[in-house]
Every structure is written in structure tokens, then in C-alpha cells.
Amino acid sequence: MPKVIYVDFQGNRSELEIANGMTLMQGAVMNGIEGIEGECSGSCACATCHCYVDEAYLGHLPEMTENENELLEGTIGERLANSRLSCQIRMAAELDGIVVHLPEEQ
Amino acid sequence: MFRFDPFSPEIDANPFPAYKVLRDEYPCFWSEEANMWVLSRYQDIVMALNDWETFSSAKGNLMSEMPGRAGATLGTSDPPRHDRMRALIQKAVMKRALDHIIEPAHAAARARLEAVKDKQPFDFVEDFSANYTVDLIAYLFNLPPENLDTVREKAVLMVQSDPLTRTKSPEHLAAFEWMRDYADTLVAIRKQDPGEDLLSQFILAEIDGEKLEDREIQLTVTTLIMAGIESLSGFMSMLMKNLTDFTDVRDALVADPSRIPDAIEESLRFNTSAQRFKRCIQKEIALHGQTLKPGDFVCLAYGSGNRDERQFPDPDIYDLERRPKGHLGFGGGVHACLGTAIARLACKVAVEEILAIYPTIHSIEQEIQWMPSSTFRSPLHLWVAA
Image 1 (tube, one colour):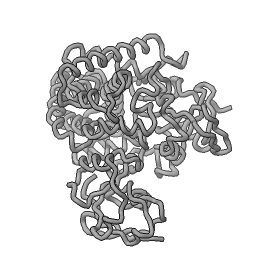
Image 2 (image 1 turned 30 degrees about the vertical axis):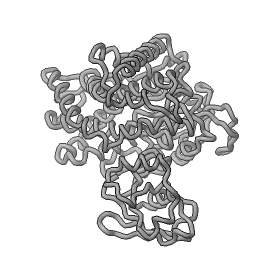
Image 3 (image 1 turned 45 degrees about the vertical axis):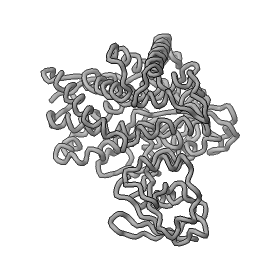
Image 4 (image 1 turned 180 degrees about the horizontal axis):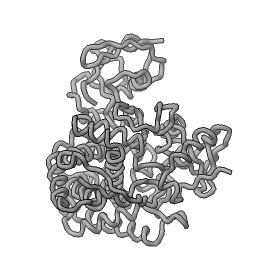
């Protein structure tokens, strides 16, 4: 299965195998990764699954919807160019090895 | 034969033993009294919340609905229209947008406490939470200062139902109509003189180049007022009940106020005021040996899912250390409570101010009268003393 590497704000790395089709938010929440909340269960309605995607993978992600874009304006952690909502990123072969950094606060 | 009547005073008072029977023995139970299925296990409720195509909100989401409401509010709409409506308000209620409310919240809490400082005991519901939430919503929505007491009175009545008829009584319906008329006057004022406040954004916004229907605006504004005043006050009262029932937790918060958010989250899990909501089946689905048919209503018992030991070990213990991720205290899925950031902030400020002046606040001997509501659970009064 393809791998995701979650790096929390203190630099701790967690490497997980996530099935294709599962979102990075689900992968985090189901595996006890602190630093992602996912309050709306992945409905793109809350912005508590904010993550910073490693530059190398940014271009492989599906295009951001207007809804995601607006929600990212409301994240607690500073919005950067590589900010995405992890509930909108579904695991796929081309994302194998993707590294996402988690903000200090959601 | 086991019976579960979500309209009964017994369930208002203490639904938890019945929930356990449901979870363990009848995980998909047909309640004749409610004329709907009841889902009580955490996993099943989460599944339903995330499958709006099968479990639709468009036929009503409150256990006893108000006429004309279904399909016209945020909570009673399905995607895709729901998502467009929600997007209009979402940004204004997120945590980052609420810095401006912190000082007014502290001021309101202090003022309400000052007003009862010589009253011992005082009623936490009538003397504090009911008024404090009105103050906050009046500020957030820029409500006219006249007749806020009446606004509150009507909000409280709207969420109740008659335990005997299992529907809204004339009094409850009248309160709902009053609130609708009130929403109409607010809308008229804003259209004349729009501001930066939350309501203005909603009232004047457009989806796909079209303004929202008057009915949608009116009924959603009605819901926002009801939720902001009554649901929030109800939850805050449950939080204070927990702190006065579990004085060791109260003491831990006095010693370390930074833990107040943990107490709030555990309260949301332990006995959220938002106990039961409903959905309407759109596609046949089999669950636990039962067949749910299109048109059937289903009760999602959040209060039960939150006590499911399959998800939360030792669920009947109020544990400040727990940090219950994924609790259902605010619902979940696309309709997850819009007011979560407001509620957390309001409760945190309230508890900070209260424990600062009353570190040994405790409840006195009393028989709790529970609000007669099939959806919400909170005490009508909570007598406390310093």
C-alpha cells in the first residue's frame, strides 16, 4: 500500500500505509495521529484537517475547489502556498511517499 | 417487550440506561412511539452522518419538526444546495473570525454574574446561561436591544414538545411563528441598512447569481437564533451541572484553568444537550437484520453514540484526561454544528469567569426538572451557590 509520512509541528514523523482512495485526514484520524481533527468527518465544512503538503507532491494533487479555498482562509495555522485540507486528498499510487506537515493548532 | 419513547419524561430525565439496552440488544430499533428507527451505536451513527444520500436531512432533522421548516434551513437541506448555503456563513463563524467576540463575552459574563452576586443560591439557567447567550447572540447578530427577553422566551419554547401528544403544542408553534416574524423584521432592517454582521452576509448573499429565497433566509435566521440562544444555553447548563456534580473536576479546573477546554469536550461527549436528531431514508438499506425503507425516519442518538464503549472505553465516567476525539456532541458530517467555535469560546469564557469568583461553586439539593424536548436535554433550572 502507498505510504504517507505525517510530520507534526515538533518534527515527529509517523509513516503509515494508507489504502488508495482513503483521504489523508481519515488516515490520520483512524491511526491516532495527533494534529489533525477532522471535525466535520471530511465534508469540507470545517478546516480542522489543515496540512502543509511537501513541495514535491503539491503538483500531483487534485485542483482545489472554491469551497476548500475559502475554508483555508479560516485555518488557525497560517495559510501558506502549500496549505491543503487533508480530507480533500485521496491516497493514490502517484502520492506514494507523500510528506505532510501538520500545524500546531487546528 | 422493550420500549423506547424519546418523548417521555423518563427519557428526558435519564436516557442512558435505555441507550445501553438499545446498543447492546437492539442496535436498529423500531420505536412505535416515535414512529421511527433508532440508531444508537457510534459506528452506525457516523456511517449515517456521512451518507446523506441515504440518510437525508431534507424531510426534517429535529425529532419533532416545525411546520414548513423542512427543506428550508441549513440543517434541513441536502447537498449540493446545502453546501452553497453553508459556505455563506461558515467563514464568519470559524475560530479565526471570532477574536472580536472574546472581550464582549467576558464583559457579558461578568455583568451577569455581578447582577446575581448577592443572590445565593442563584439559578444558573435563568440567572446566567440564558441571559449570557442572549447577550452573545445579540452582539454577534447585531440584534435590536428591544424585547431580547421575549426573543429568549420564544427560543426556549421552540425546542420543546408536548410529551403526551408527541408533537409541538399550540404554545410551541406560536413561539415558532413569533420567531419567524421576528426574523422577518431583522431581514427587513438589514436589507434597508446592511452591516458587517453575520446575518447581513447571509441575507444579502447570492448562490449561483440568485439571492436566497425569503423562506430560506427567514427559517435559517430563526434556526441560528434558536441554536445560539437555546442550544448553547442548554449545553452550558449541562457543563455547569457536570462541574457541580463532579467537584473534583471543578477543583482541577480551578487549579489549572488551561484545562477548561478539556472539560468542555468531555461534557460534549458525556451528556451533550444535543441528544437526538433525525434523518429520512432515501434508499433501502439493511442494518442489523432490519430493512429500512425509503420514507422511514431514523433517529440518530448522538447521546448514545457518545456512551458507546465500542468507541469510548469506560464511557460512563466523566474523565478530564480523556480528550474524546470524534465525539458526537456537535453532530458530524456535512451538517456538523456551525456554532462549534462560538460554543467552545462562550463556554470557556463563562467557566473562566465563574470559577474565578466562585471556585467552590456547587449545586444545592434540588429535583432537576428536565426540558420536555425530544431533541435536546437540559435542565430548566440549576440552583447553585458559591
